[in-house]
Length: 368
Ligand code: UDP
Image 1: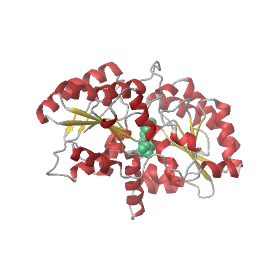
Image 2: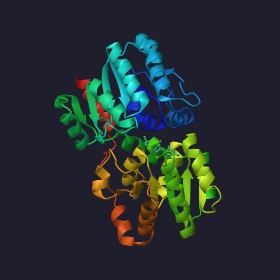
Image 3: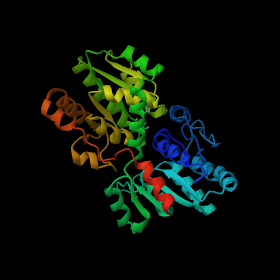
Image 4: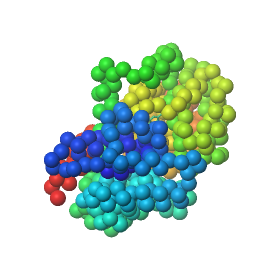
């Protein structure tokens, strides 16, 4: 099982655990590329996963050329050492794409978790659609989170018998975490958050990291958040700021001085789940958060023009607002002032699964 970023680790963790439970049936090894370092390590610690191989590839100012080349080159000895029958990759990162190519070279069967998400914009200059599509081409077993993603794979002429609709493993991770946090879980970050949060204020939780929003996008996002903070002193904006310098720079420059905006370090996964549960609404460009929030009954404004996750948009719990300053402000104002809008977007809805995706994947492989 190969992964490298925080969201991949969160979504692969339940599957790693499900495979490790099958010791004797499968021999499972975990290889991390550490495309993210700190944020990945936090997740591994929470889920109590110790990687067997750590390629430790994150470098200052890393670029996609050298990262892709390094992943393929550095995976060669790992694959030659372990000689896996199956290599599991997840989602749409550079790690996903490069690891699936390396696995193809070594002749292993490639299993793609969270397969079949598409924006159908291959001309996008951003790498995610290319990463997941290239991975899909070399994949032997596609684990699609929804019927929609299965249909996307069939449209691309993949054989239906190699596609299993599983639900998204993000819900497995979320339910595991909600349960662990609910059981007297003690966490220094949650204690710190309790000190920052004002119980009399509504919490607006913000996250953002996407390459497509770097530059003017983040400047617009910050302008909108500033205006929301000034218009709504009854609200507190809590923003765990992604470590990417393209995000850190505009956010700290434009938002650091506002009293009801709290800029904090990225949170560990349990603290973030805890905070999502406390939030009144969430503004994000994250893929994973779009999937998690509807299960917690939290409305989400997504700062993107398109999404490869249309299911919750169609269900009405997620709304695309792009990075248009006025649209972000107007839709936030609507949710803060119009009870019926808020209620219709905060209905509990879960198009992404029932928390048993990992078990389905393991059972499928057992049957082969
Ligand atoms: N997340 C986290 N700490 C944070 C912000 C997000 O653990 O401070 C989690 C969140 O719950 C979700 C995942 O990170 O599961 C999403 O990661 P990200 O937004 O970086 O990537 P994407 O999902 O867009 O690929």
